[in-house]
Image 1: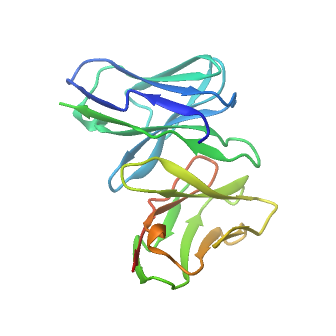
Image 2: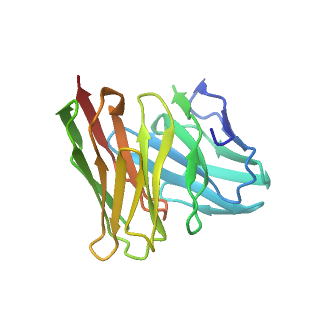
Length: 113
Length: 107
């Protein structure tokens, strides 16, 4: 496995509360990504990072923010969780450059009640 | 908007059959294309990465081709096995995924 760890793996939270998901890598990859996966929509990019403190929005960024203060950690924050953000969240590293494979974490299942 | 389309959405075949999964993309300026498999409740496992300068890539029973001019990639699985049952996804490396093909190989 490409050293990617997501935490927590499962979380249930209430509507309106802030939630932070963590992605930690040991591969020293420059690029890191957050995706969400929903039935009927497949995987959609939320935000990505191309270096420490360098981030950009993806296809479905509304309601989410990210931070990357260290190469190894990429945090995804739901500022005020809503039921529509119930999903499985995946972190990935690599890709984003020519000839580089992307590798995925095992996912975080988030339920907003 | 860039799009990645995978056809068929689901496929069921008997064990031993050769099969082809299709991926179409709209961005002809892609760097490369990557195929993944996903088992239920699990993350994505990288299968093959085809660079834009290549036309195909092989790993064991898997062969993936890339035709940038037509915006198509195919994943060929030879002599399918029940363990190949999973969802197969392609990504155009500009961060867009197809919705996948769910493959079932019947023993």
